Image (cartoon, rainbow, N blue to C red; front, side):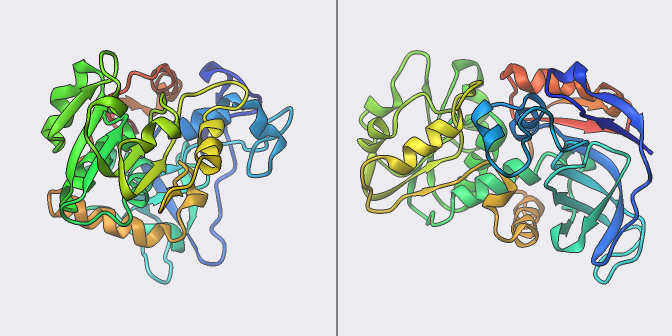
Length: 325
């Protein structure tokens, strides 16, 4: 089969399409034909080997060379072999550690969920990493809560705005002026242009602050939290040496909150991926969650999809599909 393989750290052009052995499912796995996938910051951090500090840690980075051959954590496809829960012809989607940027992948059934019936494979493939992160970040949100999403026009942000609204919250958003109408259409009631206003000084207070974009310290964000509110560090500005991990570590080490939690854009942050994917499918099928797909690339242009995502101007998500554009 064909897969795009990473053998060195570097730019998207450092990956190459190669013929690799067909995967053979093991116990508890099924073979899935990949119909669509997506590109996340999670993927290009591994592609670049950045931040460099992560190369000293366990979890997938190698010091000099990447140990992983095929990237890609988002998958939507069709089951090819029989399992205990899924069988040939079932349309599924999954959040994987890696490996989705290939024609076929063996997936543990514990990671699979049925694809939302009202979404195309391209839409469903944008949900797993960003959607799971957004839903985990909103754990504890109740009807009537006030939620602020900083970085509302990106992948996690567009899902977070919709999910918070579906949970009955009042949602405010921080993004650029060019994306204000988009996030309002997703459910944001008030939009702050980060280029002209400091969202920590607009006089509003929140029960939840989801910090996806970074840009303001945890200490600055504390002033807009209600007593007992929750600051959720989802990500932060990218950097070669430490960021965005440094921003998350700063959140952990910051002054005390009545209640605080940190959500990382990492599969490790989800204790039960199958169940959360099932929740996301239910939101989608009720019409409460619709992926915002900025661009769709064919598999042959996967490197171009990486380059566009890494440029940092994506509205919503970038999908990659076997179908022609």
